[in-house]
Length: 99
Image: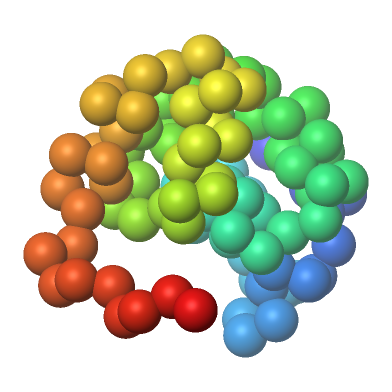
């Protein structure tokens, strides 16, 4: 039996049909969208729904996290940046100038 859907806002899922998201099957995509574009309340709900251990398992395997999300996850979940896939295999293309 599947869990009840988490009470996550549609903010981070603006480009997909929110009602058709399988939150159990697409954990990594959901976690990534919440970390990158979600609200604080979405993040809290995500932690309750999946649990800290499952989120930690997923975030270290993500191909991309913004610098802000990476730093936050590293600090909050107490995971060294070197353990993140996106940190080890960062983009080879240099960033544009930041003003």
